[in-house]
Image (cartoon, rainbow, N blue to C red; front, side):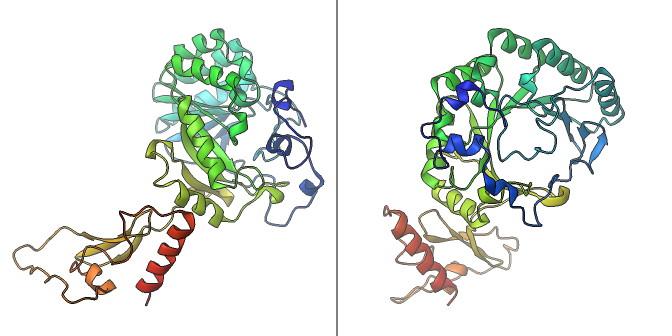
Length: 370
């Protein structure tokens, strides 16, 4: 394990109930690995085109430039390499990776990761970025880092001035809990944003840390205030030692359901599962499409109201309009065929609390399923 004095100072109680402690300090549960957990759950070694360069998606490549981090997270997906031997990419390794990029012009986007690239000396990181930037087909460079969270003092004026030389450059950081948003973290992110670097955040959903919709809402609001766009909410990867951190997929969908309507779309991340064995990222959402027909699609909004959306009329010359629903009772069939715009009782104008909204959704779905 390793933790910076700064990040350790955020611990308020030295036990498993504290989110910073829980992310930083090993516990005996890490030794209990069911068979579905693996050292390399995402199959990165299988997709490693040359040592240190993972090429899975056609237009993107992942360049691992160091095995060092400022602090070692207990949920790390690369714990098979991170921290075991602290080392940086060699000159020969960088040349091999850059040569591969020259030979594969379909790669437009290179993600610099590790370990944590911002733990490299500024001159070393400059050499890496310059080598990648020399590849004509590479359009953007991204850096993945947790340094603004665990060692924000590393984000100096010297570092940001160097990073500005390599635009278009993006940075994704890794805040997991609102307690990590401190004045020091805000200052570090502000320096990067002021240097013209767009910032995103990749949160990992962790049991006992942030698996509460209100915690994620607070986190997302805090990120937006310091100009960091919530990008991904990741389901915890199937890496050894993390079973006590994992949540059901339903928990992530519940959180997404909660955020919609409460938070600006700018602050809502995509909930994704990085599928095992190199299957790639799969986005998961609550189901807002209830039913479809050639003429109408029935949609559910965040309050549980079901509405009828008319599909485009592809046969206008022969189409006939459906007569409006008559009588006191409107059924699902009326909504599905466009005879009514919504089911009665859902009251989209009304403000519902959490339990009322859940009850409305359940009742509407039960009615729809007959």
